[in-house]
Length: 276
Image (cartoon, rainbow, N blue to C red; front, side):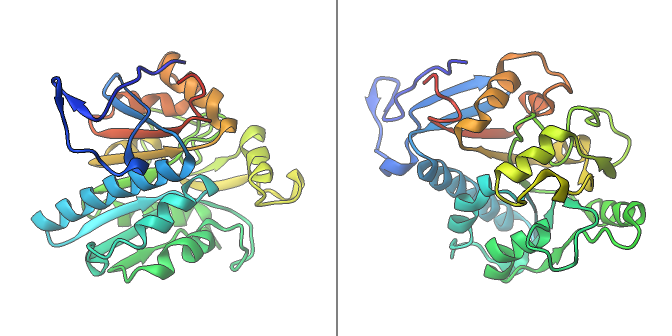
């Protein structure tokens, strides 16, 4: 995969006001309707994406009473979330928070639970209006239906997501991904590649500790959001990024569907896009 390089400091031959060094992409491209921005480091990616997300939320709150935000829980999101949580210009008391997936079968306080991870990295740091957590127990199917109802109460303004090493978005792994899924939230079986990623991300010490099932938002539910911001740092994601941007739009690489969203930006670093 090669994304075209651009010089963000020039526009129509005229010098443009320079942005902070950390915000400057080293390459940019448009793949379908997907904006792709590559940065020189993981921290530059985090700074640029958090800046854009902050702008989207403040613009949203300027025209309506509340904003509704869905977050992914993963190490790939940690730096972006740390910067976003420091956004003093966002009135977090007017923001309702959701997350997009949760393991089934872990103890309530287990650090590997995504709600617990997000508590530590974000939820506890901002005074949000409401924070709706996925709680699969004791009946995962009923929990999925309840969460779908909460999501459908109003538009979702912003989604912050990542891409898995198998191309998943949320826990829509290739075997269960459905671009026309009739459900908004469902119970899924996790494939082996996805479960191995949880070990590689140091969430679990061995594969047999990783749950086999989870509750996840579906792809149509995520795609109905108004704006999507997708942060994908790291060389271990390079193959997934390449397939999702250059291969066919297919559930073999579920994130390829992002190429058809009308307002989605993909943020890469030089490791996840090594061809720049």
